[in-house]
Amino acid sequence: MNKIIAFANQKGGVGKTTTCINLAAYVAAMGKTVLVLDLDPQGNATSGLGVDKDKELKTIYDLISGDANINDVILPTIIEGLDIIPSTVDLAGAEIEMVQMPQREKIIKGILEQVKDKYDFIMIDCPPSLGLITVNALTACNSVIIPMQCEYYPLMGITQLMNTIRLIKFHLNPSIDIEGVVMTMKDKRSNLTTQVGDEILKFFGKKVFFTYIPRNIRLAEAPSHGVPILIYEPNSKGAEAYLSLAEEFLDRNKVKYNTITKDTKIKLREVKDNG
Image 1 (tube, rainbow, N blue to C red):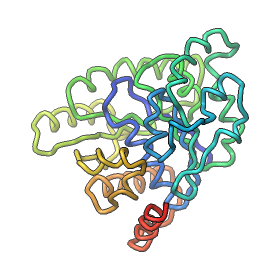
Image 2 (cartoon, helix red, strand yellow):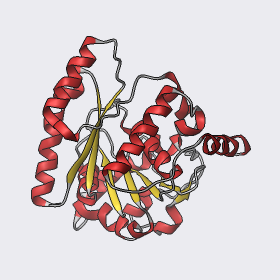
Image 3 (tube, rainbow, N blue to C red):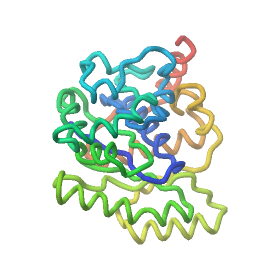
């Protein structure tokens, strides 16, 4: 399978990057080849997968500006089968430059066309906005995963995102579809969380993943160590949730995968300890 998936939500702080890198990490650990494209100028997916942004890097900005070859930009991560195209704050200026470029909405699509056959999945971490960079991601992808925090404000903004996806489908990418909605930072003790979760289910129906991501301190700590949760704390509640999400995601796509065993977790921790 060669599938490009954008992780999009114009509301920041909803667990978009956390979901992108941890789902990608588990899918790779389960035997699939995965490329993460960091399209957020904050570069959180880049640092969250262990890339040192203080070093001199070739990034997605260099690809957009035509100053680099894609094979010089793709970097391996600590997890076998998982690569990343990094991003830094330089990308913040790319949106202005892209306005003047021909086929400006299809620049990212053209970049990914060069490598999409090398990976089972390409996962794009979009910025928390609906600007030209996000439009590029939605034009390039086959489907969208929408992480949604179970609170009031993220729910209110979803109409704008859905309108954007509908416009992209009509004008630029007829094949785009909603892959699914992931409820994040869910606190089962909160009545508001329950109410918002019910509203999400009413709005999206079967598109909502059964697996939800709980609030978990280990998930919050992992990015500061530059590793996904399956390496940082594979027995935490957050890790169990993302493992379940990865299994559900692959099952939906009818893709066979390797089971994450206790031995697999031990090997991954050894990679971290030796890294």
